[in-house]
Amino acid sequence: QVRLVESGGGSVQAGGSLRLSCAAFVSVFSDYTMSWYRQVPGNQRELVALISRGGSTQYADSVQGRFIISRDNAKNTMYLQMNNLRPEDTATYYCKGTGPRLPVYWGQGTQVTVSS
Image (cartoon, rainbow, N blue to C red):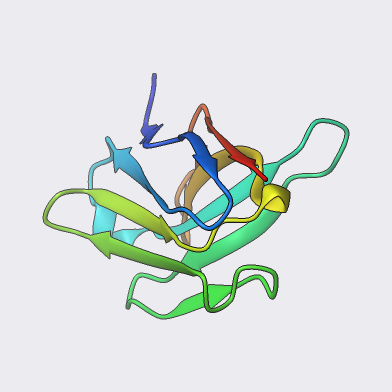
């Protein structure tokens, strides 16, 4: 059963912007710590950004100052605003939801391609 669905990926030139969305089909979205990961074929999946239940955020050094993670608990949705994109940001982006005594959910991924 699908619990997290990403959207908003696509192709953009370097310097451009994209906004990813992650729609959550869970009972109490606000209980979940939500995060964005990305993966390039042959590499490990890496944490991009995280937002806690209380709204605290953290970012990978590589995206600090360019990406903004947010959530709308009323819409059961998390977002990733990606600005000033670079070719090295090219990857499949996944959303993840987890929390104390909660199952871990992953989305199916959305592709982001940045051309130089």
